[in-house]
Length: 558
Image (cartoon, rainbow, N blue to C red; front, side):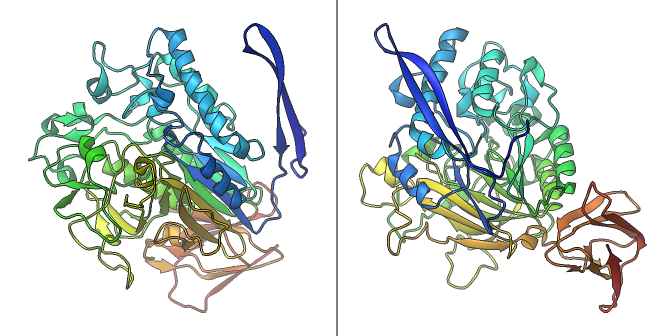
């Protein structure tokens, strides 16, 4: 309350602790709550995923990330793994299980405290944080009684006590803004999906596991085991997209719809943060029936390409269910928003497609900090429409569920000659996202954990950096255009296009400058909102029809 966000504020936490024996000692943790960097032309976010303990305490990651001088941090999930520290895992009873988790959570803080002490940090939970290999949350229900391991996971829901799940989410997400709708899901498990506005960028923070359907009961003919169809005759492209299957759930789709339309308080860019990307970018040997083979696959030398691979359909990925994946992307692109996520253990940059390639947003999947599951991308066909000189695994593809995706870069595992190879040959690292206000551009980078970004000719993984324009995130082919808007008395206003027949908001955007020619995607008449939302400086023009006259102009005065 009454916080002065334009000034740095030092803080100090004082706590008493029995470090040795029974003697209480006093300890201090201090840092700076930085002012909101509204003056910066480029906002820098560092993004992480999959914090296994090999390489702990990850000092090289902390040092190298600090070189980028990030303004905020995003940990996309798997901040802990069940076996971290060699302690094993205790799932019951509740109190020992809680202490078992907290011990691992403290190790995460130990590793990254020097980055987090002076920077806003977003953390969200994924499957291993709640002691799952995969989790299909099914709105918080309990897994089937009497089951364990993959059988429990395939039944949908949470294996652990609901109060234990609440403990995990409280430790990792209670510092986030209030949830959009705080209504708990089943078993009294809470939610944390929300929006966070920082330095002109609005972040939608999603839970892409909690509401997701488990595929096994919905697709009995697929013979699902741990998210993988065991029936070789099952065609995930044509048979998997069944009615009733959920991804984000209707609550989060409603949230995205509201968030995409709200550009108040000077917001000029939007981004979605979630656990994993909305496509299944992975291959396996043709004989493989699940991802269980992944840790034992050979790591190739630089320049080598694995043969006899197939594009897979892993139901743990957000390539399924297809209709709900497309519904989410349809809402996200109305905000011209990018997507940043992790989980896949395979750094990549893709451009999503719904009806056509590249008609939705762009995404960065960041590498694992320490990789226990080195996925790979060696497609048996060459990508279409790729740029000259780019690898054969880039370009336009369909994933194993038939989703359109344009692949720009992938950090496949490869032999580095560094030791230990389990840490350095599995394409480990972190991501950097740069939001540029003046140019309205987003730059994606995936960096090796061992590379010093400040040293000479150091570079990120091959294929990065990649820069997209904000407009690339809704690059759908227009059906036509409305007259050009020319605004006087205001620069960089918000423009919102509404289809009057359906009442649907087509998109909302803070434009760059004072001129904009709105694109539309169907016939009919449209309303145009212009100005600053939630203030008196907001005008609505109604009944505007598309025109082929490129000289047609609507002057809007403030």
